[in-house]
Image (tube, rainbow, N blue to C red; front, side):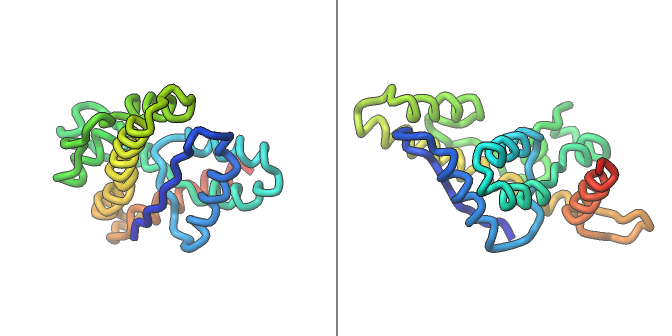
Length: 186
């Protein structure tokens, strides 16, 4: 079952340590695979583990739980609704009808979210009303954007098939494949 926790730095100081601690606490409550759709998150977590050695064991444990559905989706699944793209923003609406970014005001794409966060973190906005408005728009985007992984997982589950042809949990299959790859690299 998807869990939602949020962390949005206020721009007053370096938020990385607080972010790492919040992330560790949020994921300590359950041990399910963590779906991410790129190596970006893994790379950032590794950087945090180096920067904060006292948190490295916990961050490494999170990294070990990361599962990227892109290889599975890109290599084994195609729907015309993907429109020749394996980006999560193309895959999620195809696997989960009704999911989308319509109706968001101000921040409705990853690029807009990055720009909004830069404005907040840099102190560029000085009006408390502008800060509150942009922060609300960014949080609304994140509330819509982050659950896409949880919404894609059931779609992947319906496609999951074990090697012997039995119906299985696709997310668990992805986790097993990723763990096998990690074991071979060691």
